[in-house]
Length: 65
Image (cartoon, rainbow, N blue to C red; front, side):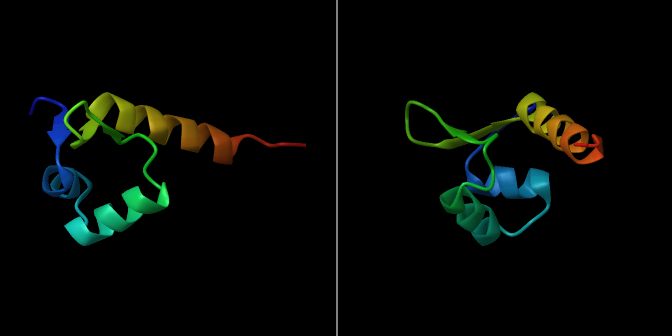
């Protein structure tokens, strides 16, 4: 595993969800860790994904009071 997923199908395989679901999430902006490369392909780095999970965990476990 290289840790780099290019294209909706590879990203869907990594996230274990349907490619159409990935595409809808990308268009809605719900996968901010996925970026477009210079060729217009969707690219997900495993490090970015894990970092976003860490950020989300910290956000939901901190007490805002």
